[in-house]
Image (cartoon, rainbow, N blue to C red; front, side, top):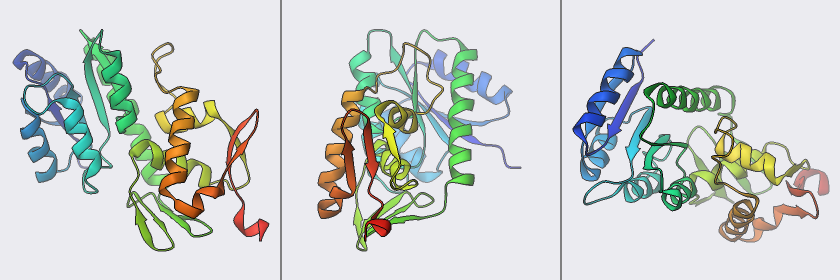
Length: 238
């Protein structure tokens, strides 16, 4: 089985060397770069299975790198684990909203980071293996393998979090999901307690954005007052 490729992006040489050593010891193929510009070039030249991305980079910072990677269909599926300072809560929120998979605060334990990396890769592998079949609800088609969404054949551009929420709802038309269930589906269920920044309110914001981007089909996403949301069972309703 080919070894998984991880790209490490950090402007501190000591951090790059520490991560290179620990990740390589676990059997990963590691490439390291020190700038956002080099990170974008490296990710596009050889798409890694995961990126460990420092947010505090000179020039093109980590959030902008995340934004550009998520905006490119070729690199959007790459999971990103962010490295951030302890007082960088706002950056963490912004990164998660952009679609990053997880984060670790500096200074960090290599064992904790390795655990986060393994968990994110495990989720990505499971999603690829078990959830790759296209899902259709009315005129909406969600293709997890290609990470694409279309409405009546027209592509719709979604963030990674919006995509995961839509896919989660579309897989079970008619089922009602609480906001917390949607949070878990969008972010993963192995974030450490007390370190979540995806909230009930941010779920509502994502739903509003999804409805707008889906146009008339946005009405398929129904609010169940006092509970959460569901995807309308279009076939049954008609």
